[in-house]
Length: 245
Image (cartoon, rainbow, N blue to C red; front, side, top):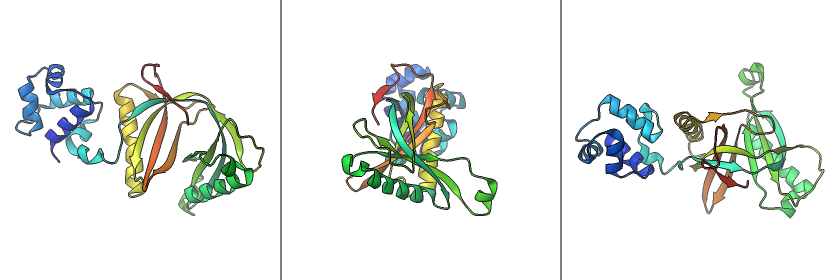
């Protein structure tokens, strides 16, 4: 890992020139250049200031290999997600994601959604209300999955809970091939969002009729991607752009 490489990578991610970063750090452009080539190590106070400029943690700046992670994680964006209706179901089992996704696929066929709207999106989120006995004795976890129901589609097919997610703002990150190292890549994505929110004075928020977080898995060609959404508060219209799920 090279600290200088991390500084250069984050500077470019912020679309700053060496001159612009130097001005914000109170140093010369030559000093920034020497930092990025590892000729000089910045003082601790400058590293702390850099973390503020780059919206990252000190450990992230100093210890992680950020250029490698750029191939796995997208930049974090604030998106205003329009209101949508959904049909959801929860399963508690040793493999809840697989089980509930299979259940929802069957429901999509029985309800006619698969035939009428083959592009309908399936989203999911952790279901936290699992007893200690279920977790510790039986190795169970909870997971919920939901199909987003397009406005033009109507059904009363039973076996799911129908609800609406009202318009809300989310911090969103995309993971490339999330299941290659699922227990590392997915938690890291959540960690990166939470660090971003803290650094930019946004707050995660739980609110009725708004999912606090959810995931959407999809493919482009042969590559699998996962979008992670976390609901945030304190967003202005200038911060977000509207997205329809």
